Image (tube, rainbow, N blue to C red):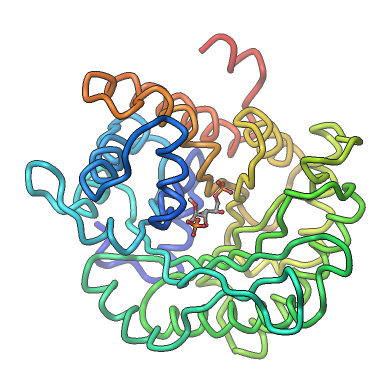
Length: 341
Ligand code: 5MM
């Protein structure tokens, strides 16, 4: 079914009503941290087993997952029975995607700030990923808030890299997920997050324009507008939803088919509640969905705990979070629904 889709159709399928994206593209270092938290050794086999458990969660995958972002190792891996992992994703009716950035490095003369690398040779890598079955790609830029941060240099350099990546993807046959993440790790208030997020998104869309990227073939993956985790003044679900929509309406052209949020360290329930509330605040010019890593995986990771006998429990936990977030894309999630389940 996916073979004949145009890039516009792929982008629309990624944000189809009731569905969203599973971000399972943790690099080797990040997945090790996740496995450390459940005291499981991170090896190619344990990583494969964990991800196979998720991709074979039939209920979640068929009904609520539109696509899966994979890491380079995973797109090349085979399940225990020899089936390539991307084929399992496709068999469930979802689209395989690939993280193509090469991670972050310190940005010279900007203490504490990061630049995402990976543009060199990207065109060639895109061609290989297309041959491995990828339909879309992801590149994450990281913007931190702190003393004298972010700098214009950091925002501009990262936005330019995102635009060059996006142009190469469209040229090479992949839908680019454009992910400029303003981190929620600090003690900044929600006003600061709002101002920085607006600045970042304005710059990203200016650079996408200069790079001539057709927005109809892209998906945006932004942070929500939210106070830093260490800020004493945490605001309501309503406030986060309203402010996020306000900024998105200022910055994201309606030509963009969909916005799939990252969860950024929010609790599972907060990430779902915010998405649902925003979808109740329509009509909106783009579809609003999810591309969650932690907010989809924390529960199944814990339920699995690295034990084969817990695979069914891990899949149930994943199906639950996928269903809650799928419901949120329709604006129909409620705390009661969460409890009832
Ligand atoms: C799943 O984590 C992704 C990969 O992170 P690293 O490259 O640091 O290993 C990450 O890019 C993720 O796709 C996004 O941050 C969204 O995940 P969250 O957990 O914020 O929803």
